[in-house]
Image (cartoon, rainbow, N blue to C red; front, top):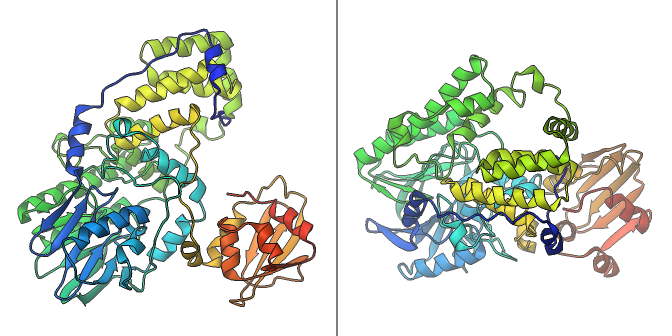
Length: 564
């Protein structure tokens, strides 16, 4: 479908003669009830562990040792981290010795600098964490950021948001700053270490991310499970977009945890769980649910079923579907089924009718013909909406708005359907996505809330920045271009070549051949230009960037790339 216009003027909406659809729906009771576990508090576990719940999307955990302390996971922003630091300081005055990241996600890493304050703690993580951290901040950042804000309901007011299923809300607002501290100690499989007088075992346990770890305190039999388990059906696929999450590895990681027989389980989301048998039973149900969805999906795949058929047919058996730790407040079985299919077989569902489908515009024209013309098609949207057949009405607006993208009546019904579907959801991710998309059609500009800082961008490798640059090349603008630019970084002595060749940007960490343009600049300055912390013209006028081969030619070269 062609991109639907996101800003609709009041005058256009008022010009429509049809009555404005109104949507009002109470929040599902079970969704409100689940939110009670996120009441803001510092929950003390045993004699020396403090869990900050409700301060952000994730939990942050303080372990008080003999002469210092450890923090596990650090929330999503400097603002959130600073608030938790004040709370932790009120219960423990010992210096911070170490920070441990369970994985790279923003809500676990980006408040670290605020929590560290003036201290210089060691930072422990799996060896894959920096790789995924850097990729997330560059390659597909523009779209995953937008979709994340939809999924977490960042722009929704409290009544509409309710909560995020695994935490109260993602603490993001305009000009949010991130304070990620890079790992200083990494490992591959496991690491036994003594910190603050306590023995800890860090164990690689991939699940929601490939770099996921769990932390085991053998002396007290306490397990910190990161995002491998929380009080909701696991997000085996997330609608904000992610590479395939290997559900078999996730299930195996839960088995690792179950084999330890912990007496206390402290997730990085939702609530603390106590009692060896209770924990064992929950972990057993959790791993069984993951395996059930995987195995039944594969079974259906081998029977020739399509993702749509599988998503409709596969449901958890009653003993798992009704389990309090497997309610669909975060992941959804139907989404996970589709992801597993794609992980094994890719996009093609096996139906020859979908192998070379009609274009969206052609399909929309055929739907209009079937409906008997434009007015009949619009009437079908209105009729379906009045029947409360919101999903079908929403799908019809896809076709209609592909052909008539600015039609105010269709846009109003699309907005109304999104609100109706969103308000009915008990899954917060789905709820927020529907409602935020409605807000975008009403004029919301879903743009980046994070304000990059020099400290944040200074650690991103040049390789990540340049390879991300290649993915921003506009193929139509560069179809007839053959231009080679050499970047020489005067402070680090690195050389990078970007050669645009008929719609492809070849990137190499060396001088390919004689360049058409040479740019000399400090690495730190170039990174800040790429992050839009600096503006190009003032930087050039200050003499901080030198260009051989023509300033105008370099500007034209850079205009071949998207500016996100």
